[in-house]
Length: 175
Image (tube, rainbow, N blue to C red):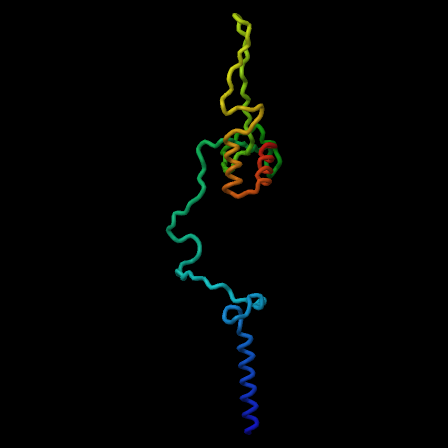
């Protein structure tokens, strides 16, 4: 019986060592996180539970995108034939119009302004006189201050590399 008790104690001690070893991970020992394997413990949230269900709460008014009274563009969709018996409905008046509105950005494209300076010949001295261009218009073709500021914004504030900024300008030009 003494030998049995000693063997039991040794096995219990060995079992405890194995269990302790298996319970170790990167959070409770010096092991690296890569040794955790796929059995990683979930992240612990510091937020306290409120006891409320997730989502909108009772009595909350909610917010939604509202229709506008005067849309920029209207696309009518007409009924040409009955969906049930296929009879032509082209001459029938609509009894109701259902509306849906899509909010989107307009296509971005460059606007080109051509400056034209008159050239006139003086009837008195026969010399030609050319009208002056605005001081900011100094070349045959050039970018305006709005597109320059947009490209500076992309490059300096959004940290777009110069090559990608050039590519962006190229796609705007092609529109």
